[in-house]
Image (cartoon, rainbow, N blue to C red; front, side, top):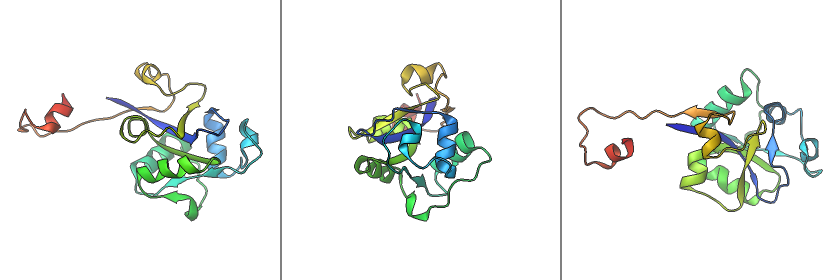
Length: 156
């Protein structure tokens, strides 16, 4: 299956798109205000996930590559839902998660997805791998799993 690593902003934030370079510059501290990327003259609050989370691993491998992220202990969010909650109430916040979680499990009308490198993460851009952070998702099941089980039905 396909999923995507997505960037989140509050619905009231005027920024709708970031480039990979802008994201890297925000998370290394080279860009600090939204007006540097087309928004208002307010400070960007770049939230991160805890170091042992899948989202953080995706951020480091897909986006940051070899770059070192800011060391901001007060900006670390534990739990995927925590990131959504934080962005809901912080107009200057920037966060990240996986598309499936944000769109199908805990969708919030107060949080929007940002386009990355000019492509918005939606069904078609993921299917066609046009969205830059599209990634594969693998499911592993036991060979002897009961075919009527919920896990098997999800697998199908």
